[in-house]
Length: 406
Image 1: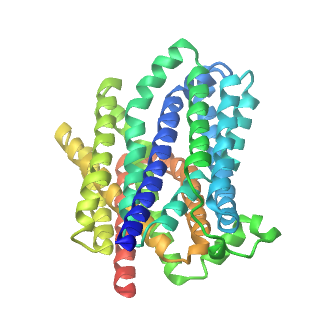
Image 2: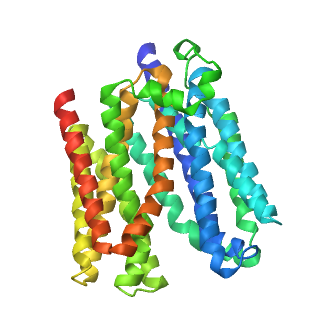
């Protein structure tokens, strides 16, 4: 009787911690979605109209570049010192970054805010590692899916609210975002226990631990992890082409305006939430993760192919179907991919593997928009054909890894 009660209390405690993580992710997502639509208006205070787009690109690239170097280091630090306090440091770095945005006053202040936020951008890395510490391997894909759904919920209402707040004062949404992230840091301090036991932590931390490329070298020693990360890079490249180019595609090819495009983006958010919070847990009960991953990539490739067809067949229904397939494919593959990554290393290396993964995504965020812009200028058809091929190659790699790994 006592043993059953102990197990019940332990299970409740685990669920409690996991739902706190989900709530923190949602708060952060709401904060980010509040401010991103306002960046062009904020930059217009410091740059001529013709240079605002370049300024935005540089701000995003600086942040992604800093994250590339910082994420593996923060992940490794959490493997050594535990998740809780490294996560708090990361969140407080974001708070400072957004406060600087709110203060503004000069363009260099905005860049300083992005640099500080990027150099402390280990929160997603550590949150994913926390999930891995707290769940069984069989549960992780479901909870990674819930994280994605929480991000989707935060993105739906945030832009509209940000617009209202920004009309009051352009800096106000940035202060509110800083406040939301500060609340997240307080929640971690007060409500979340440490997830990584001292005996499970890595004991190796040297000066080389602060070298991003040392972590890449360590992770890439495993052939299975190399292949898995390659599939992830290709997935994020194909998805990145869609994310970067989709609004331009709708504006140029279909001549849709802001209202129509905003409606489609809301549909994107709804599809993402339903896939990750409802469809994925349902499929995980019936099919192996490996099959779901291949199916997700196949749906993504099919959706991109429909956008390619949409260049020649102008049908709103075709666009809706393409978006549904793309977002469903993303929502199925991404959580399973992160789950398989977490299962490929020991408990003491969860931060490192998630950090390297986030670092590769940051590199994608810098390079893919630049390459996609060049290819799109040459031919939109070539761009979407490239995206389809890239994702199909990822599906083939995952298929081989599936059969090789059993």
